[in-house]
Image (cartoon, rainbow, N blue to C red; front, side):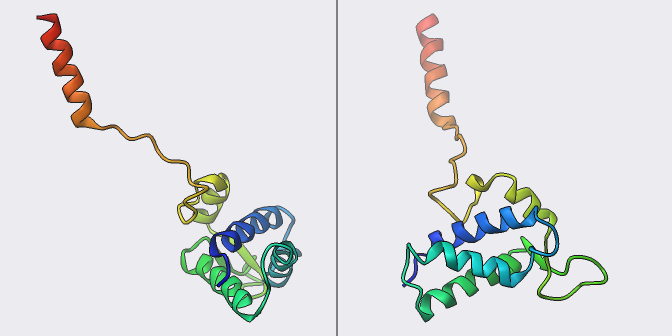
Length: 126
């Protein structure tokens, strides 16, 4: 089975790079070919891996990061564009929630622990 996190990470990196290159390069085929070129030294690119790449690619459309078309005159594949959700997500790839290793944890407060600390301090002051 292919490394899905590596595939997703590579796809996101390529999309981020290609999205700023204009409509001519922000198309399905050049993006997928670049992903394959980058992955071929890291994973075995058999049919299962290719299907994993295509599935991950499709997931980005289902998750509404990407949508078809580049303008009203080119609304169909192979042209794509980043949705607002996609633009916001691609600003900071390390916050990708589907990538646990790249998703920086948000600071969490343990309210019970803080409450005990405050109570202890109050008791010490009295």
